[in-house]
Amino acid sequence: MTTTGEEMYALVERLYPLCRSITGDGVRATLEIVGEYLPLQVHEVPTGTQVLDWTVPQEWNIRDAYIADTAGNRVVDFAASSLHVLGYSVPVSATMPLAELRGHLHTLPDHPTWVPYRTSYYQPEWGFCLAQETLDAMPDGEYEVRIDSTLADGHLTYAEHVVPGQVADEVIVSCHVCHPSLANDNLAGIAVATFLARALAERTPWYTYRFLFAPGTIGAITWLARNAERVNGVSPAHGGPPGRAKRSAGEEPGAGARVEHGLVLACAGDPGHLTYKQSRRGDAEIDRVMRHVLVASERPHHVAEFTPYGYDERQFCSPGFDLGVGSLSRTPYAGYPEYHTSADNLDFVTPKAMADTLAVCSEAFAVLDRNRRYVNLSPYGEPQLGRRGLYDSLGGRSDAKQAQTAMLWVLSLSDGEHSLLDVAERSGLPFDTVAAAADALHGAGLIKA
Ligand code: ZN
Image (cartoon, rainbow, N blue to C red; front, side, top):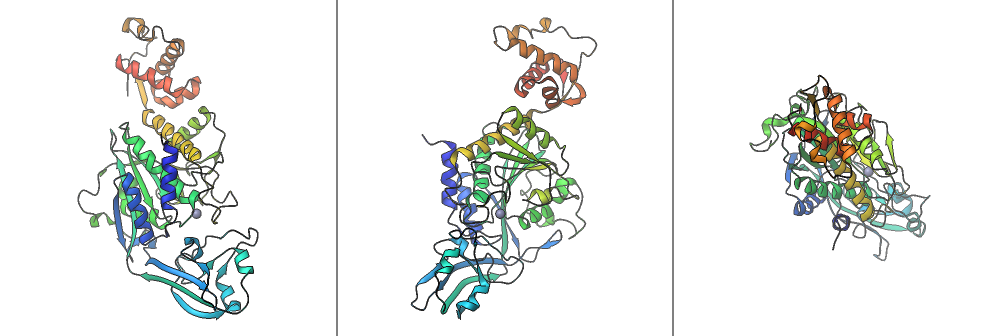
């Protein structure tokens, strides 16, 4: 039987060869494959569209690229790895001596067998990325260089998948889809997000969960520009009103809903410990939930303060939006030597690590979904639990004592100020026990949400 970890790994394997960038057919092909697992709503935003302080760039597509020696042998070949071309390279077709070509070559001298990942999105540039040892083996002389790419007006592509909840208020889960053949930084996050959406759909969550598969930075900015009013009820200062008018009817399943919480998934598949990077607010509910779940699960982990670099939490937490959005990674951004190199490959991520990341997300959202504040409707003295059958319901349970203690804690702290997570933390009881006690008390009419 295939485990979910293995299924996620198989998805990463399928996506790995594709040449993704911030725009273009590689992103579309990626979303098409993800779409086999989850129905996606794909959005195409035209080049030139103003999005907050940015503009949607021209679309980049590439068919072939190589450096060939005078005998016609391809010394560097895009067909072997999508990393070999500087992302967003303008087209080139020329013959030039190695001395001149060197200015367009990128290597990692400290890791001579690895190919670096480099891009030049907003400067017209062309280049190749190759292993230092390949370069060292290239004799002086003439080389044919060819990059068969196009930069033309087109679209920026991103996709959404919504798991409907019991309330319209939303949790966003976002991952970037713009890196080419890099397994951990990009693909593992996509795989975990995909399987998380499927798992959530099976349990009809409290919140509505909106999954966002978008190119890094410009994709998140585009999404925010088009959803700004819904996100925080105000128009952004730049770029005028967000482009809601352009959206067709039916495109806003959560119209009127607010984005309450969110999580950015990145570097989700390496065997290192989990790292949770807090939102800019630091005390957002998602921050408290993630800290609680990581501690309670006794997983080795690290909780990091917010910094204004990293992944798309930068955009979601920018002060105009200031959303309660944190970021979950294993070994974080730029924290491993394989980061942004060909060594971030299929050997670097494991089914087990991805399954672990998925499990933490699932546990955290289970807590988030049940974390409510209640008011004790019988606050003058302790209500008589036995009369209401609340002791009987515990009869024979091995954890009856703990369940009873949990009821007393929930009654004690249900003053409308404290959430169930507060109760769990203050009492030291497992969140599940506290939530079950609240359900029982609610069923007996002793507390109300
Ligand atoms: Zn990256």
